[in-house]
Length: 309
Image 1 (cartoon, rainbow, N blue to C red):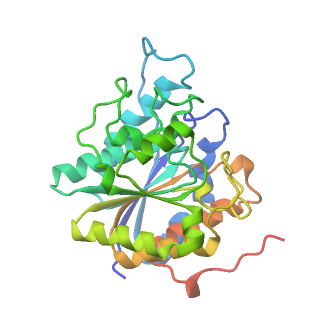
Image 2 (tube, rainbow, N blue to C red):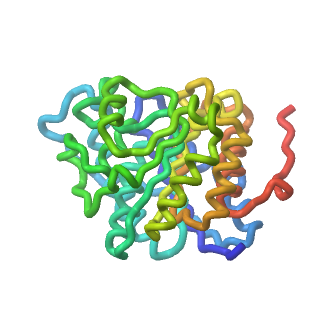
Image 3 (cartoon, rainbow, N blue to C red):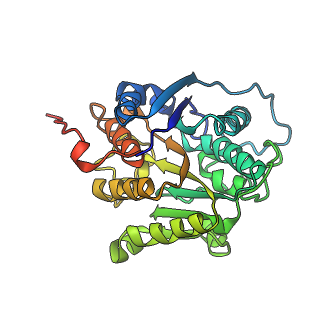
Protein backbone atom coordinates (compact mmCIF):
# COMPACT_ATOMS: atom_id res chain seq x y z
CA UNK A 1 0.00 0.00 0.00
CA UNK A 2 1.35 3.41 -0.97
CA UNK A 3 1.11 6.00 1.84
CA UNK A 4 -1.00 9.01 1.04
CA UNK A 5 -1.35 12.55 2.30
CA UNK A 6 -4.71 12.59 4.09
CA UNK A 7 -6.28 15.98 4.78
CA UNK A 8 -8.88 15.94 7.56
CA UNK A 9 -11.31 18.84 7.08
CA UNK A 10 -13.88 19.25 9.81
CA UNK A 11 -17.32 20.48 8.78
CA UNK A 12 -19.57 20.98 11.85
CA UNK A 13 -22.58 21.59 9.62
CA UNK A 14 -25.92 21.41 11.42
CA UNK A 15 -28.10 23.58 9.18
CA UNK A 16 -29.35 21.00 6.69
CA UNK A 17 -32.10 19.66 8.95
CA UNK A 18 -34.02 20.52 12.07
CA UNK A 19 -32.82 17.84 14.50
CA UNK A 20 -29.55 19.12 15.93
CA UNK A 21 -26.39 17.29 16.91
CA UNK A 22 -24.33 16.73 13.75
CA UNK A 23 -22.10 19.70 14.58
CA UNK A 24 -20.48 17.41 17.18
CA UNK A 25 -19.56 14.86 14.51
CA UNK A 26 -16.02 16.06 13.69
CA UNK A 27 -14.92 15.96 17.32
CA UNK A 28 -16.45 12.51 17.70
CA UNK A 29 -14.31 11.25 14.82
CA UNK A 30 -11.25 12.74 16.47
CA UNK A 31 -12.14 11.13 19.79
CA UNK A 32 -12.74 7.80 18.04
CA UNK A 33 -9.18 7.93 16.74
CA UNK A 34 -9.51 8.58 13.02
CA UNK A 35 -6.11 10.26 12.68
CA UNK A 36 -4.38 7.50 14.64
CA UNK A 37 -6.11 4.74 12.65
CA UNK A 38 -4.99 6.24 9.34
CA UNK A 39 -1.53 7.09 10.64
CA UNK A 40 -1.06 3.49 11.78
CA UNK A 41 -1.62 2.47 8.16
CA UNK A 42 1.35 4.60 7.14
CA UNK A 43 -0.56 7.58 5.82
CA UNK A 44 0.54 11.14 6.52
CA UNK A 45 -2.43 12.78 8.24
CA UNK A 46 -2.99 16.50 8.66
CA UNK A 47 -5.95 17.94 10.55
CA UNK A 48 -7.00 21.31 9.16
CA UNK A 49 -9.38 21.92 12.05
CA UNK A 50 -12.97 23.09 12.04
CA UNK A 51 -14.26 25.34 9.28
CA UNK A 52 -17.02 27.94 9.64
CA UNK A 53 -19.67 29.12 7.19
CA UNK A 54 -19.18 32.29 5.20
CA UNK A 55 -21.53 35.08 6.28
CA UNK A 56 -24.64 35.28 4.11
CA UNK A 57 -27.52 37.69 4.58
CA UNK A 58 -31.20 36.97 4.27
CA UNK A 59 -32.17 35.57 0.87
CA UNK A 60 -34.89 37.67 -0.72
CA UNK A 61 -37.84 35.72 -2.04
CA UNK A 62 -36.80 32.42 -0.49
CA UNK A 63 -39.55 29.91 0.25
CA UNK A 64 -40.36 30.26 3.95
CA UNK A 65 -40.26 26.51 4.64
CA UNK A 66 -36.60 26.19 3.63
CA UNK A 67 -34.67 25.59 6.84
CA UNK A 68 -31.53 27.67 7.53
CA UNK A 69 -31.06 28.58 3.87
CA UNK A 70 -28.56 31.40 4.41
CA UNK A 71 -26.38 29.35 6.74
CA UNK A 72 -26.37 26.41 4.34
CA UNK A 73 -25.36 28.68 1.48
CA UNK A 74 -22.57 30.04 3.67
CA UNK A 75 -21.34 26.52 4.33
CA UNK A 76 -21.51 25.73 0.63
CA UNK A 77 -19.30 28.70 -0.20
CA UNK A 78 -16.75 27.76 2.47
CA UNK A 79 -16.66 24.08 1.59
CA UNK A 80 -16.53 24.65 -2.16
CA UNK A 81 -13.26 26.55 -1.76
CA UNK A 82 -11.86 24.21 0.89
CA UNK A 83 -12.59 21.10 -1.17
CA UNK A 84 -11.23 22.55 -4.41
CA UNK A 85 -7.99 23.66 -2.76
CA UNK A 86 -7.48 20.51 -0.67
CA UNK A 87 -7.36 18.32 -3.76
CA UNK A 88 -3.91 19.69 -4.56
CA UNK A 89 -2.67 18.66 -1.09
CA UNK A 90 -3.77 15.04 -0.99
CA UNK A 91 -6.92 13.03 -0.33
CA UNK A 92 -9.37 15.10 1.71
CA UNK A 93 -11.75 13.52 4.20
CA UNK A 94 -14.62 15.82 5.10
CA UNK A 95 -15.85 15.15 8.61
CA UNK A 96 -19.51 15.99 9.07
CA UNK A 97 -21.76 17.37 9.83
CA UNK A 98 -25.06 16.72 8.02
CA UNK A 99 -25.26 15.79 4.35
CA UNK A 100 -25.85 19.37 3.20
CA UNK A 101 -22.06 19.73 3.49
CA UNK A 102 -21.84 17.78 0.23
CA UNK A 103 -23.37 20.73 -1.61
CA UNK A 104 -19.95 22.32 -1.16
CA UNK A 105 -17.58 19.35 -1.06
CA UNK A 106 -18.82 17.68 -4.24
CA UNK A 107 -19.02 21.00 -6.09
CA UNK A 108 -15.49 21.86 -5.01
CA UNK A 109 -13.84 18.57 -5.98
CA UNK A 110 -15.75 18.65 -9.27
CA UNK A 111 -14.38 22.11 -10.06
CA UNK A 112 -10.88 20.81 -9.36
CA UNK A 113 -11.35 17.75 -11.58
CA UNK A 114 -12.70 19.95 -14.37
CA UNK A 115 -9.63 22.19 -14.14
CA UNK A 116 -7.41 19.09 -14.42
CA UNK A 117 -9.33 17.77 -17.41
CA UNK A 118 -10.74 14.74 -15.56
CA UNK A 119 -14.38 13.66 -15.29
CA UNK A 120 -15.83 13.63 -11.79
CA UNK A 121 -17.67 10.57 -10.50
CA UNK A 122 -19.66 10.28 -7.25
CA UNK A 123 -20.47 7.19 -5.20
CA UNK A 124 -23.39 7.99 -2.87
CA UNK A 125 -23.79 5.47 -0.04
CA UNK A 126 -27.09 6.43 1.51
CA UNK A 127 -30.61 5.33 2.39
CA UNK A 128 -31.86 8.44 0.58
CA UNK A 129 -31.26 9.80 -2.90
CA UNK A 130 -30.84 13.45 -1.81
CA UNK A 131 -32.12 14.51 -5.22
CA UNK A 132 -34.63 17.12 -4.09
CA UNK A 133 -34.32 20.76 -5.09
CA UNK A 134 -35.31 23.78 -2.99
CA UNK A 135 -38.40 23.85 -5.21
CA UNK A 136 -39.43 20.24 -4.59
CA UNK A 137 -38.51 19.53 -0.99
CA UNK A 138 -41.54 19.29 1.24
CA UNK A 139 -39.60 19.24 4.49
CA UNK A 140 -37.41 22.23 3.62
CA UNK A 141 -34.38 20.29 4.88
CA UNK A 142 -31.51 21.03 2.53
CA UNK A 143 -29.48 17.94 3.45
CA UNK A 144 -31.76 16.24 0.91
CA UNK A 145 -30.57 18.35 -2.04
CA UNK A 146 -26.83 17.85 -2.78
CA UNK A 147 -27.11 15.56 -5.81
CA UNK A 148 -29.68 17.84 -7.39
CA UNK A 149 -27.36 20.82 -6.96
CA UNK A 150 -24.19 19.23 -8.34
CA UNK A 151 -26.03 17.85 -11.37
CA UNK A 152 -27.36 21.30 -12.23
CA UNK A 153 -31.07 20.92 -11.48
CA UNK A 154 -33.15 24.11 -11.23
CA UNK A 155 -33.93 25.96 -8.02
CA UNK A 156 -30.44 26.72 -6.72
CA UNK A 157 -30.17 30.33 -7.93
CA UNK A 158 -29.16 31.56 -4.46
CA UNK A 159 -26.30 29.06 -4.20
CA UNK A 160 -22.78 29.59 -5.59
CA UNK A 161 -22.63 29.01 -9.35
CA UNK A 162 -21.07 25.70 -10.30
CA UNK A 163 -17.77 25.70 -12.15
CA UNK A 164 -18.75 22.31 -13.56
CA UNK A 165 -21.60 19.87 -13.01
CA UNK A 166 -21.42 16.13 -12.40
CA UNK A 167 -23.01 14.25 -15.32
CA UNK A 168 -25.93 12.16 -14.09
CA UNK A 169 -24.44 9.00 -15.54
CA UNK A 170 -21.33 9.54 -13.41
CA UNK A 171 -23.29 9.08 -10.17
CA UNK A 172 -24.05 5.80 -8.45
CA UNK A 173 -26.32 5.57 -5.39
CA UNK A 174 -26.15 2.37 -3.34
CA UNK A 175 -28.31 1.55 -0.34
CA UNK A 176 -31.60 3.26 -1.24
CA UNK A 177 -34.63 2.43 0.87
CA UNK A 178 -36.41 5.77 1.49
CA UNK A 179 -37.20 7.92 -1.57
CA UNK A 180 -39.97 10.55 -1.76
CA UNK A 181 -42.41 10.34 -4.71
CA UNK A 182 -41.08 13.55 -6.31
CA UNK A 183 -37.52 12.29 -6.04
CA UNK A 184 -38.52 8.90 -7.40
CA UNK A 185 -39.99 10.46 -10.52
CA UNK A 186 -36.93 12.66 -11.03
CA UNK A 187 -34.56 9.73 -10.54
CA UNK A 188 -36.48 7.58 -12.99
CA UNK A 189 -36.13 10.33 -15.59
CA UNK A 190 -32.40 10.68 -14.90
CA UNK A 191 -29.33 8.69 -15.94
CA UNK A 192 -28.19 8.23 -12.34
CA UNK A 193 -27.28 4.64 -11.49
CA UNK A 194 -29.27 3.61 -8.42
CA UNK A 195 -29.41 0.40 -6.42
CA UNK A 196 -31.88 -0.16 -3.60
CA UNK A 197 -31.54 -2.67 -0.79
CA UNK A 198 -33.82 -5.19 -2.50
CA UNK A 199 -31.36 -5.35 -5.38
CA UNK A 200 -28.50 -5.68 -2.92
CA UNK A 201 -30.33 -8.53 -1.19
CA UNK A 202 -30.90 -10.28 -4.51
CA UNK A 203 -27.54 -9.79 -6.26
CA UNK A 204 -25.07 -8.67 -3.58
CA UNK A 205 -23.32 -5.36 -3.16
CA UNK A 206 -20.09 -6.11 -5.04
CA UNK A 207 -21.70 -6.43 -8.47
CA UNK A 208 -23.14 -2.93 -8.91
CA UNK A 209 -20.16 -1.35 -7.17
CA UNK A 210 -17.70 -3.18 -9.40
CA UNK A 211 -19.56 -2.17 -12.56
CA UNK A 212 -19.49 1.47 -11.49
CA UNK A 213 -15.80 1.40 -10.59
CA UNK A 214 -15.03 -0.11 -13.98
CA UNK A 215 -16.63 2.95 -15.59
CA UNK A 216 -14.61 5.30 -13.36
CA UNK A 217 -11.37 3.52 -14.24
CA UNK A 218 -12.13 3.47 -17.98
CA UNK A 219 -12.67 7.24 -17.94
CA UNK A 220 -9.66 8.01 -15.72
CA UNK A 221 -12.16 9.71 -13.44
CA UNK A 222 -11.81 11.34 -10.05
CA UNK A 223 -14.03 9.55 -7.52
CA UNK A 224 -15.73 11.25 -4.60
CA UNK A 225 -17.30 8.89 -2.05
CA UNK A 226 -20.03 10.19 0.25
CA UNK A 227 -20.74 7.83 3.15
CA UNK A 228 -23.88 8.58 5.15
CA UNK A 229 -24.29 6.87 8.52
CA UNK A 230 -27.79 5.80 7.47
CA UNK A 231 -26.32 3.65 4.70
CA UNK A 232 -25.72 1.16 7.52
CA UNK A 233 -28.54 -0.57 9.35
CA UNK A 234 -29.47 1.50 12.44
CA UNK A 235 -29.15 -1.59 14.62
CA UNK A 236 -25.39 -1.24 14.18
CA UNK A 237 -25.13 2.51 13.55
CA UNK A 238 -27.77 4.27 15.67
CA UNK A 239 -26.21 7.76 15.73
CA UNK A 240 -28.20 9.31 12.91
CA UNK A 241 -31.40 11.32 12.85
CA UNK A 242 -32.69 9.71 9.65
CA UNK A 243 -32.78 6.04 10.63
CA UNK A 244 -34.31 3.65 8.09
CA UNK A 245 -34.41 -0.07 8.95
CA UNK A 246 -32.95 -2.60 6.56
CA UNK A 247 -29.63 -0.96 5.76
CA UNK A 248 -26.29 -2.45 4.83
CA UNK A 249 -24.72 -4.84 7.29
CA UNK A 250 -21.36 -4.04 8.84
CA UNK A 251 -19.77 -6.71 6.66
CA UNK A 252 -21.36 -5.27 3.49
CA UNK A 253 -20.17 -1.79 4.41
CA UNK A 254 -16.63 -3.01 4.99
CA UNK A 255 -16.71 -4.90 1.71
CA UNK A 256 -17.60 -1.69 -0.13
CA UNK A 257 -14.71 0.11 1.54
CA UNK A 258 -12.25 -2.71 0.86
CA UNK A 259 -13.25 -2.86 -2.81
CA UNK A 260 -12.78 0.90 -3.01
CA UNK A 261 -9.28 0.57 -1.62
CA UNK A 262 -8.42 -2.26 -3.99
CA UNK A 263 -9.55 -0.12 -6.92
CA UNK A 264 -7.24 2.77 -5.99
CA UNK A 265 -9.80 5.16 -7.46
CA UNK A 266 -11.11 7.16 -4.48
CA UNK A 267 -9.85 10.73 -4.49
CA UNK A 268 -12.02 12.31 -1.74
CA UNK A 269 -14.39 11.17 0.99
CA UNK A 270 -17.34 12.53 3.00
CA UNK A 271 -18.27 11.05 6.38
CA UNK A 272 -21.70 12.54 7.10
CA UNK A 273 -24.78 12.59 9.34
CA UNK A 274 -23.03 11.33 12.49
CA UNK A 275 -25.02 12.68 15.44
CA UNK A 276 -23.08 11.77 18.60
CA UNK A 277 -26.04 12.88 20.73
CA UNK A 278 -27.86 9.77 19.46
CA UNK A 279 -24.94 7.34 19.77
CA UNK A 280 -24.41 4.49 22.21
CA UNK A 281 -21.00 4.86 23.87
CA UNK A 282 -19.45 5.99 20.60
CA UNK A 283 -20.16 2.76 18.70
CA UNK A 284 -21.26 4.55 15.49
CA UNK A 285 -18.26 6.89 15.46
CA UNK A 286 -15.94 3.93 15.99
CA UNK A 287 -17.60 2.01 13.16
CA UNK A 288 -17.30 4.96 10.78
CA UNK A 289 -13.62 5.28 11.67
CA UNK A 290 -13.17 1.58 10.94
CA UNK A 291 -14.89 1.99 7.57
CA UNK A 292 -12.68 4.93 6.64
CA UNK A 293 -9.65 2.85 7.61
CA UNK A 294 -10.89 0.00 5.40
CA UNK A 295 -11.20 2.41 2.48
CA UNK A 296 -7.58 3.40 3.04
CA UNK A 297 -6.00 0.02 3.41
CA UNK A 298 -6.87 -1.71 6.68
CA UNK A 299 -7.60 -5.41 6.32
CA UNK A 300 -9.78 -7.61 8.49
CA UNK A 301 -6.75 -9.03 10.30
CA UNK A 302 -5.72 -5.51 11.31
CA UNK A 303 -9.11 -4.52 12.70
CA UNK A 304 -9.22 -4.13 16.49
CA UNK A 305 -11.76 -6.03 18.54
CA UNK A 306 -13.92 -3.81 20.70
CA UNK A 307 -16.31 -4.67 23.51
CA UNK A 308 -19.31 -2.50 24.31
CA UNK A 309 -20.28 -4.20 27.56
